Length: 224
Ligand code: GAR
Image (cartoon, rainbow, N blue to C red):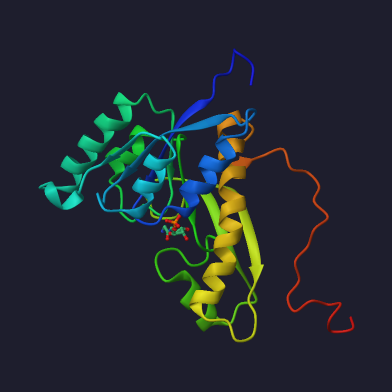
């Protein structure tokens, strides 16, 4: 990065184990990565990911949402912490709280989320079980800008995995998670560097040619 474009200060918001947070931290260790993880915040003071971040020398903060009278009170306190740490971009990384329009609007175009499905299919919870129940052959993950409507903002990047005979929500979820760890650092890089541009509500990333195609079941195995 040149001196003219300092690394963006990122807050990773987590509620649990924080494996996506870890993938962002690992990417941000590269000298030319356009973002640094400046804060890990959780709405659960006992989230295992907080310890992991602390051990890596990253600033952490936690506010238990149940200690607040309302969703708004919790978010105003969270916002104060983000501002105190001079955060430029927010990455929701398994942050399992719905956010109010007020909070989302504080971060318009500067807050992204990873969702374990190929949006706009399977918004909400239990995405792997629902994909299996429908019998889809491709499933995956999406990183998108956050808007007030849940899981609905402009899509930055997506990854697909095959759904295999005998999959359970756990085996499918594990296959998706591996791709989440590739996808989120890539998407954050696109946003932090300014390469991802929102035009007419859609994200353009500069991608114009990609020869890789995933067909399930594999045509080569079927003799096609
Ligand atoms: C990830 O699979 C993420 O996509 C999902 O929670 C998991 C968090 O895991 N997020 C959502 O479901 C948001 N609706 P992690 O704590 O190991 O990153």
